[in-house]
Length: 206
Image 1 (cartoon, one colour):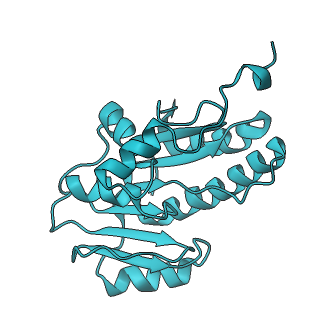
Image 2 (cartoon, helix red, strand yellow):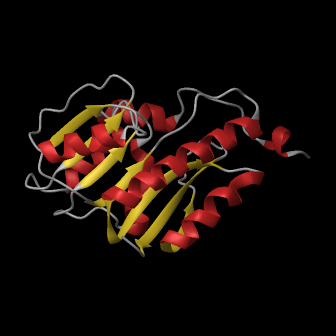
């Protein structure tokens, strides 16, 4: 039986969708970060965290429960952002390629580097697997470049990746920059999805 035929039918409002609505999460992706946190314990109370492209903001909902109010949480997204009331959460609607603008914004809020970077970035999909996957790789290579500048040495990066044949184009770069790369697929990811999370542990250069 082929992979395509063995996949479960697509259900838009699955149990994670329903549970997210019940608990007040902005999206079901909140459970993905919960699982990652339970497995790797990446988010710490005193950590300054940069979150990239996780609109409508479910990752931030999880992060803000863990970090102290003295820690800063910055969210960068191209999409329109519904703000959070907490004074330690800073939102920037901007392209992640615009490093100058990002640096200007971070200087304004008095922060240079982060203890953790999380990304839930994904391309606009075409339905053609290899095209969508390579777009995902290209986007994640942009995030890796961003982390070169804005992530502290020996600290961690979380990437969402569409995995297919060309994934080595990303992993080969990651292996030169991080001590260990762990691939993790939360149970809350849809069964038919090619997405995985790459947890990049201990950035080895600055």
